[in-house]
Image 1 (cartoon, rainbow, N blue to C red):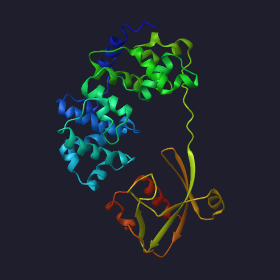
Image 2: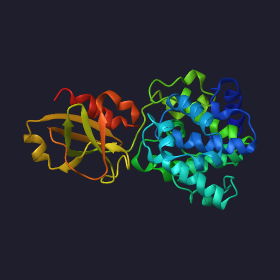
Image 3: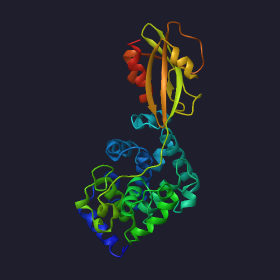
Image 4: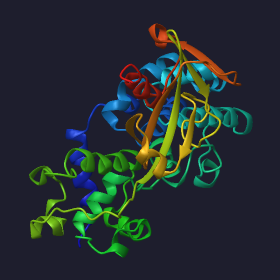
Length: 329
């Protein structure tokens, strides 16, 4: 495939079609580092349109690395509430503290150093290198993967592995506008080469795409199996007060308020006559028995919450979903 003019075509499309996202504002290098760090953490497992209002509020309240490192955990979680995956927020603060302590308040500018920061892995380190530091790197996110799969018409299991796709990134070539170029390719995936009904007539690399020539845009993905697990949640209620606990038992929703829970066998779930609900959390399908108990037990880390005052405490959507089902027990 001739990819000589691909960077020019993609950047021309980007300059005329890009979204005006708040973390793309022209600011100082120091602020760009901070904007990139915050936005990349928020964008992990969350869509752009969802992130925008949270990002704007976050940087308004926490405008720099110093304030992020010093913010109280309760305040931090309040600004993150609704985005989910709260470990991201905690890791973001830990990263800010480490940046202040070890890097004089500035983001390190190598992939190896970035990966030593909490919550930063291979993709996020490459995204920061490209976007914040204008390095000639194209991070492999879902949008870039989709473009490569269609351009090269990749269908076999070994062809859609990250290792194989990373080798195919050479197709895009490089540009001196590396920050814009990395974002431009991801933008084409988000706005044009969409998972369903791609807008091929608007694509700047249409003539390079084998899937377009074959008129077959099916995307081959690796099979991800969701684990089904069974739980029993104890709904301790006394008048209008409900008992929650700070979760230090399960790997999900660490340190967040949840109803007291235990994992149970499928058999117990199947034969229980109590109310049951299903909640999907990350890659886990949770099937939960809700058992109401009138007496409040004397346990550690308990939180007593009045139904009429649920806004007084930050609750994950997981807990809110159970709360909404409690009145129907």
